[in-house]
Length: 370
Ligand SMILES: O=P(O)(O)OC[C@H]1O[C@H](O[C@H]2O[C@H](CO)[C@@H](O)[C@H](O)[C@H]2O)[C@H](O)[C@@H](O)[C@@H]1O
Image (cartoon, rainbow, N blue to C red; front, side, top):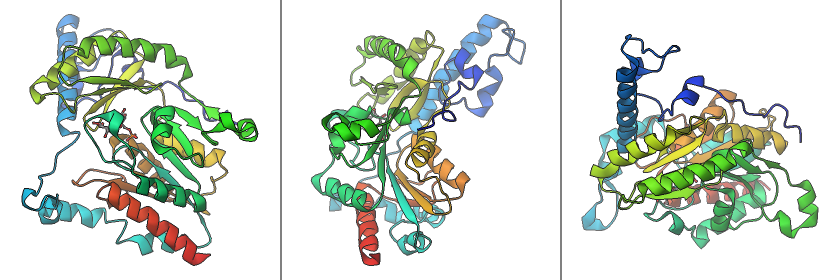
């Protein structure tokens, strides 16, 4: 496989010189470090440095608070149907309609073309749970994904390490991109049991030089958050997750501050945020969107006239993939969400059970055509 055009280059020199925490709020941009050590307002370096740190922590904290809005539960009926009553959700659905009710429209343009399916894992194939180690996939969901893979090239694109996500999904017939696309196996994950497949397996790890650094930062993060009740650290091979789902909200600022402090010693790493998780990753020009492009190319599915990629995901990191599909003007991003969100996706699904229904629809549609 020709990887010559896929080499990620380090971007955003500002992010290299200071750990950017998912972008500063625009009103704080004036505190960005300017060459020469002075902020744009000309303040003394140490004063502005302090303000930068404060701004970074505050920016991160804002992002943490808005990262996973919780829905009200309809306790009387033991179910969450509050979205149905929510005018903001209805207005959002008009812009980002259900992929189930729009199914005919989605497949209308697919006759005679090839569909490729890309699936995020957490929150898409498995429901969000408090303990990341218990985010198992149900047997019925596994059966649906297995069926989809019989008819369409199917890949899992996850923030988890590739091995971990394979342990959950357990399907050899899929392609896997772990660590937010920084660890791609464009062949069977079971390559070690199959000599023939082994020859064909191609591994792409654009952040391999960061491995020792990721282990080092994991150690530091483990140490600093060990005193915070509920905070956990997950090494995802080329990136690290700091979970705060089980941390009391009054301690979130401490988490943000500690992570920021650790990252000061690692200027080639940055932080982004997902659903109640801070994700520490290398400052390289590589994300889930690039991984989708890479997979399309390496699987010979790069013909945008004849291939329709469908990407389903629930998280901010999935937006990079939605954006790529929009820019290529081919295929569809589908956001899994029960709350209105700013998104580059074309369609939406509420939760993993609707994802499963959509996957079953795809299989039925394909069988009907054959
Ligand atoms: O790209 P993904 O497959 O969606 O992975 C993103 C992160 O998912 C996991 O965390 C999320 O799910 C957990 C289990 O439901 C939940 O406890 C946590 O709050 C969520 O953020 C995973 O543990 C992370 O490492 C991934 O980065």
